[in-house]
Image (cartoon, rainbow, N blue to C red; front, top):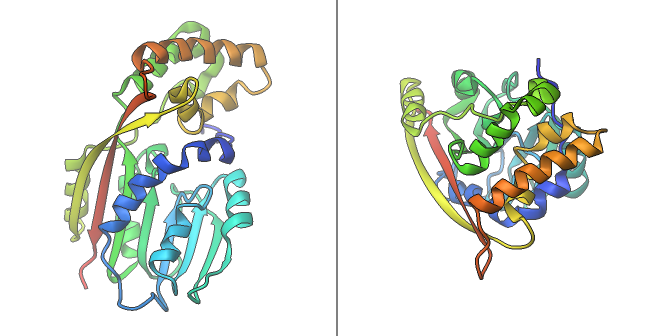
Length: 274
């Protein structure tokens, strides 16, 4: 089994504005499970990360009990420290260790969400039935995932990792996440499970600023397993980053106002029959 990556919450949150926008767009399409502020509402966030996005759920449903699940101790520690506790609307936000590959709802939820996590979970669509079974009647399952595996950011990284120099050194970490399905496949999976599903995709033209901003972005996500594998070998780490940085500069040239980084996202909102 591939060993888990060591996550750096602060690096991930360096681009928090761009990373949060897809979840806000997803959240806008989720129907209210009930009227009012959400008293008695139970919500689960699979792959909650640093908890900043999970906290947005308590703003939408102030009386809800929201639980974020993640398998990264680093992310959970930050989430607990900065976001856990009672909410002003009478609800509660807490965080627990949990891996999306194994997580099963322990009691009915009215809403189960996931934000940019399933790309790390091969076969995640096979768990849809289990999670939808864990919804209360009329409950909603909603998620968004990156759909940019064919973008230069990923194809260039895959080419570098496939070179003998890095393939031999990285071993099991030489691959990049490719677990995302096509939107039509998600639609078919969810409707086959009896849900009324809405699936769509959007490409955000993100304008990033600073030195080598695309590399800085990817350091917080796709590069984590590779950086984890190279931890302790500073010379190899810098060599890898320099090679990747140079190729990214050609693929994503800086312009007068910043660097444009197109980013495709796939969204799904599925409602369980009442």
